[in-house]
Length: 210
Image 1: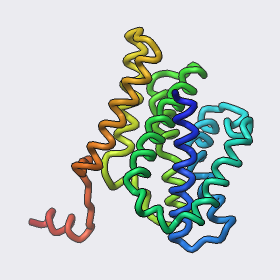
Image 2 (image 1 turned 180 degrees about the horizontal axis):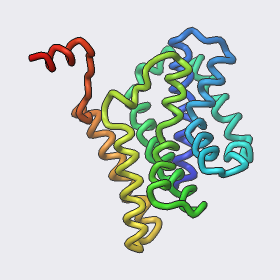
Image 3 (image 1 turned 90 degrees about the horizontal axis):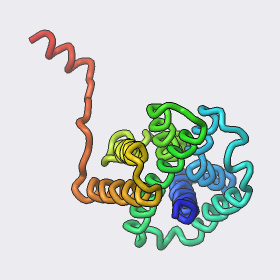
Image 4 (image 1 turned 180 degrees about the vertical axis):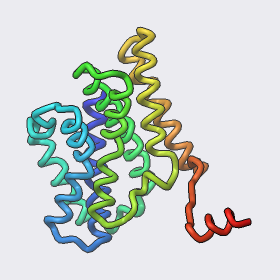
C-alpha cells in the first residue's frame, strides 16, 4: 500500500513544486529542480540527519525521472490545473501521511528512540514543502496555515503507539493513514489552525507600559 501511495505522492508533490516555480517565472531547470526537491527533499534531509546512507533516491533513479518528468509535464497542463485544485489537496494530504509513515519506518529500522522516530517522520512529511517555499522565496505555508505538520505528528504518534501495543502492521498502517487523512481534510474544510503567535515590538512595549 505504501509503495503505491509513495509513487502517487512524489508525482503530485513534484507537480505542486513545478507550479510554485512557475509562479516565480523560473526556467526549465528551475522548474525541474524545485519539482525534484519538493518531492524528494524531505526524505533526503531525513537520511542525512539519521546517517542513512546512501540516500534513498540515489538507489532508485526511477524516482528522479518520475519527479522531474512530472514537473516538466505540469508546464503543459498548467492551464487546467486550477480545475483540479481539490484533487491536488487530497493528493498532498496522501503525500504528507505517506512520507510521515515511511520516515517513521526508516527511523525504526535504524534503531532510533521513539522521539527521534517521530521527528524523522515529521521531517520526511514536511521538509520538501519547506524547501520548495524557501527556493521560491516565500514563507513556508505549512507553518502558518491549516493543520499540516500537526497532522504528521499525530500520525507518527499513533503509528508508534499501535506498534507498541502489538497491533498487526497492516491494521496499524491503515488506521494511521485513515486518521491522518481525515484530520487533514477536516482541517482544510473547517480551517483548523493552531493558536497563532503575533509579535510586534511596538505593541509589546506599549502593553508593558500600561
